[in-house]
Length: 64
Image 1: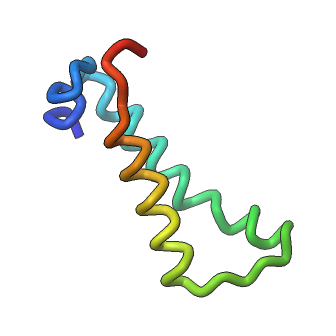
Image 2 (image 1 turned 90 degrees about the horizontal axis):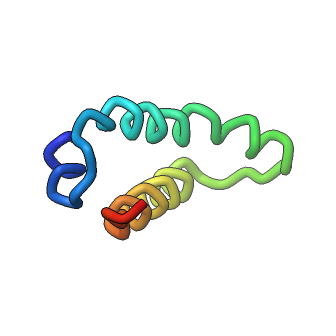
């Protein structure tokens, strides 16, 4: 993560924060699914989490 952030012009010292945010996306999806009574398949949940993380990181702007 540090190398990736550096390649985007970001401070690589922020790697632990970004890593924890990604863990949070995975860890806290279940309560949302439970509240909405949605029952997506595990593969669908994984695909959506990957899509969100990848697209979010791939568009990371060095200006922010």
